[in-house]
Length: 336
Image (tube, rainbow, N blue to C red):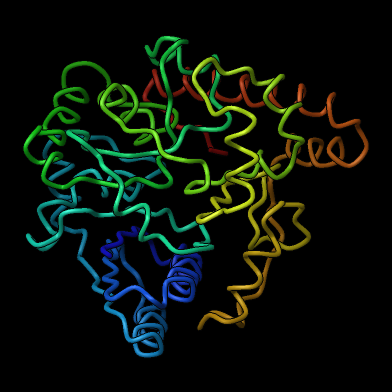
């Protein structure tokens, strides 16, 4: 089992907590090799990863990102919020050992909640990637040139078929697109993957990328409001909820589970693995989120669920459209 993470020193504790959950819930796996694309991770945090390696008798390999970043700069790919970290996974194949056939990329803001061997064993046919549908994107995808009746995937969990990825020259396709068509996107790497490779992605169950919306809202009400034409059925989401393998806790109302006094639906599952990780003494701080998120947090507490979901969708769509306009002028939203 070969797993890829990418993170800076700021995100190292969250990455480490995710790795803790990966090891804890895959003890029966014969081998687990974790590759971490190292964007200036401190020696203090690396020593804590070493503790994980020794405790679970697994392998953790840090890969310097300097040559990848230099390559991205030479290719003219723009940074995102002053960093290249988000793009690294798309150009990591040259730095991964040749024996790796399947590589599972997992965002640092995740918790692995079950065995992943079944995912590694799926038939990918000639597809370079396998991904789960994104829970929130609806009309936004048309602003980046994706048809409404086409799928849009979330880049928080990606299963790479390395052989297909290399053989089909997918990294080159991404570079050609950023060079000749468009380089800046609101959702950066996620938009690029969907725009350039979207038609050749194999969809996987939501249980491998279980997003906050599925926990926050009644699934039937959520599906009626978001009404995405290419998405999971109610039955598929209910089944995924019974057997979540990977929780993906991206920002909810301006907060992550590592923020103090958050209302994130996955706070408890994050805390469970925080407390058994080498980062057990991590102190949560307030999020300092913009006023719009503070208002959204109040609305979540007081409004009926159906009304809040509609406001939640409207807020998200307006935010993404504004972010898209900024990206077209080579700018990045400060609150993405």
